[in-house]
Image (cartoon, rainbow over all chains, first blue to last red; front, side, top):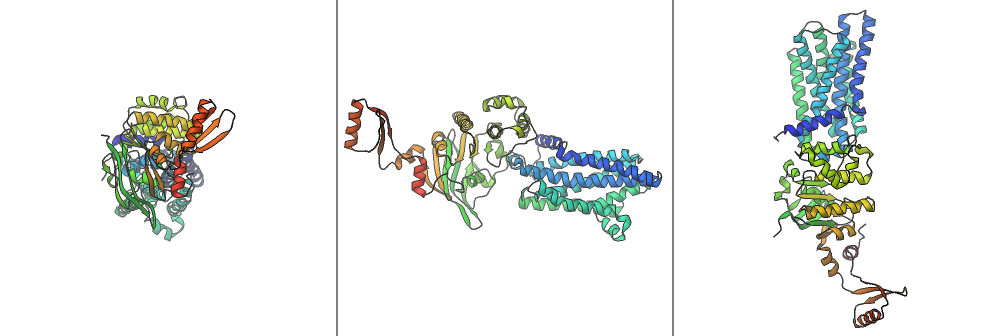
Length: 243
Length: 283
């Protein structure tokens, strides 16, 4: 395993983090926050202020955020590096694959988590410190998995347009299926095997005072984390970051 | 005795069934410029990619700073600089921030950036976003980034291609300075004037094969089989004369009569040598 130089990692995180505030990417967290705010207003009015509906609005916002930030921002950022030829330049400037991987992943996950936390305040969902811990742990895990999958999609994207085309169906599947579990038992069953579904259910559980995730949920999150990292490593070894 | 910074020994490269490099040999010493000269598709960029560890050779051995190119890892990039057509800049970042990013990656003190920008002629544009630079300025920024860590070996893949003559001249001036500072420069180009002016040695590459190797003067003189002189007289008449006793007599007589405006030998250029050897144009 190649060593990680903190100096290089910090430089990459700094630049990648600033890139997330560019107009190409900042729209994603703003959209997620706006969507959460809108959902909160709609459900509050529709339900007459039921506490469970605020949690539902939070779950919707969190799903939107994890999917858009995790999948799209990571894939598009990698595709942009390829499109502008800066990836090749970085790789021939003493940056190794692991440093680039972590440097790309960390800012996305951090920003995604900040938005997830802001969503809690927007939806006025109250949590105990333990529930906060569980919420942050589950949503961070979901963000990491989404970002790793985003990197995999980025490997296959030559430019930002391709990244957008490739990520859209993935975003829809991982976002829509948990969102519509209430309408179909089949979707409910499928959703239980998605990390987004586990995170979605975790918010409902927190709101009902239940443990956020059960053993099965932890197993699914762990398995999908391992699988996504494994798949990334296999593809990276075969193709590098450029297919 | 000069140090070998690059040694290429019997390198070949195959893409599927196409042999794009065939038994290529060359050496680059400290403080020298080696030019790989050839038309598009001759194998110049493939050679650079092999030397910089971006491609594996099918056979043969190449070493950069004593390290086998097949075993190159990212540490070698702290000692070499690369300017190629696939080098990019961060367009949203300023000129200074672009260099600052790479300075942090390469552990270069930030105080080195301003002198480099002055040397490369971009100091006045240091706060400008890279997206707003002209093509020539962008190329200079890429060159500055490649020079930031004072590499021992600089790889340049068609560095002046598509640039206006004044920017190209400016880059030539910088390259000569770097050479004088002891940097070894591996240059690929299809511009024979550039190669003649800058390179200590050139390899004429055609379809992956080195068809001639030596100093530009050696190569040109080797093909100077029919010696000719081009004379322009003060009355405006022009004459091309074959070397011989008659010609010597005529030129001497014109000189005595003070009638010669200009007098040139007509040895071949690298371009005409390339044409003679391969039957192909360089451009």
